[in-house]
Length: 332
Length: 245
Image (cartoon, rainbow over all chains, first blue to last red; front, side):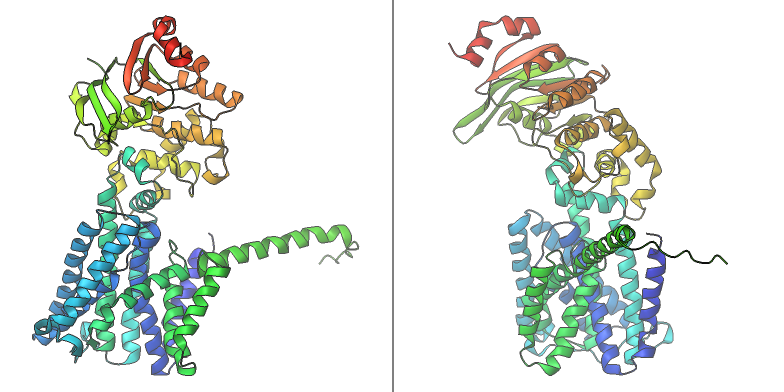
């Protein structure tokens, strides 16, 4: 616990320094992708990890925000209006998703979110007057906050990093708050929570809204990163990929979704350059994770490190009994 | 005025009538024992009183206030707390965290998403006090998964008491406990101040009879006998229900 602030500081510095070390724009862009998917996974994790509600429709939420931005830009509005409109649309749709899906939990919740996500995908695909159908919408410009254009890979990375840091810090605050404790309580014992005086539905609703907000934020980053949005980004596979990021990295941990996002993005972009059947690689990696660390990469690594540390300490404690007496060191 | 009153309460699950025209009136400060064979509808009655199940007809009153249609969580805010026959705790967390959740449930702080919970010293102090009442303060930081069954039972009771209820519903608080643990829990329940009304379901007659002021005997969802300890024990119908002819 004592070293935590130091570790966080080092990690942030490493992320800030990354574009200076990795100067190739291709790799800086991959880092940007990891961070924007990490924001998506962090949002999903609030619901899946801390709320115990597995959603298969979250790509729809980020998709609505992305389409909102693209549509408003195409209609001639500025970036500020487009971003606010995209986030607003994402939140409104999140509230609708939550109102419908939270009538159930467990498997039924998954199926309702899946159906709602598919509806959004269907609208993106078929409502051609707004979404331009399968052709998608191209976004020609990126915003220039405070007069700093985000056109280069490095500048976009820095902006994404800032948003990511705000998102993960926000998640850290919420999950350690009384509300976060209440949310985890509704995951473990909803019935008891009701008897203790908690409004389980409302707690889940606000968790869904926070999750939807982060999804919308990642959607805005996504559309500006690609400068293009098409129905493919809203498909079920995109939602499932987000879920894989959360589960492979470690649900209900702050770092897990980030590690999961890095894993998926790296396999998709880097490994696919060398192996044509990269989907097979991704699948094999997930099988390995499920077999070796069913709790996810981050908690699994912590567990292995702890048991390694413990056995090392035990060995050290056992040695003096068998080893010859150490020669006294000369005192300075 | 009764602390807790139940009037003509009925509930059926399909064709099975689990609660039939049950009427009860528990006075403030009273210790009421509810007994009956397995399947008599005791826990169902508790679930109807706390609102976890909605009755088909009849009314539930808390200090003369009709709460029949009041949500379960609101009943907690009105001063009703319960324990569960099957332990219903938060197994991933520490004992202290379990007690803290009980306190947060009635505090507006539960909606706060920006303060750090482990820095809310006021709430944590009260949680420790609640654990002290059941003699678990020395192991507050222990994970619930590492505690014994008897300790879990005491955590259940600590959580209910932490909410400072006016009416406390105990569903078989002695179930599955060893003789020593039973003695501890008995002392614990005896120490509950008289401004708390206690309704208890229990099978262990030695302990339960000693604790109760009045006893209600349920059988097939109906009140068969109700009265003081001596009246119910002497009643031939009690013998009939428990021992057969």
